[in-house]
Length: 168
Image 1 (cartoon, rainbow, N blue to C red):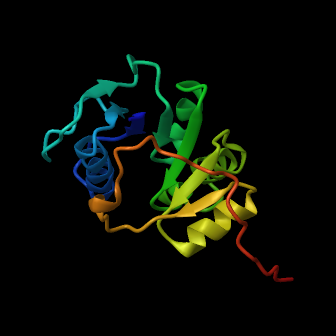
Image 2: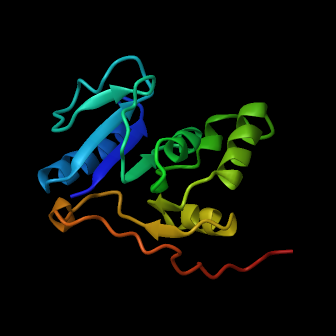
């Protein structure tokens, strides 16, 4: 059994639903899972089968910490001496206008993030992560929680790099 934490928001949107599905599925399979929230309120709009903590008191001793958005990846690294993983459901920098400080700073954070690998939900995000030199694992947006295992989670990074063509 692994001790796993996800760092993420608690608002009412699809990304949170995916995070909760991951954590509920892992908890059902016997893993010790926690959501470390970056918002003031916990997830209270979905059924959760795991404890929630605030980022100001995140707990410790995690085997794996998953940052669920680029801005949480540095916290994921800080909270574990084991494996820190980034989870990309979308390109976070696209929340800001191109060329703006929010866009530029988030893209730089993505390119230099100290995570051991990146889980992505689309091929183009995988290509971006791979181009940035990050080992990539492609996961589905829809979850088959029957595939979750009670055994300790293994992550054999680095994974094969995606073949890319450069355009002039």
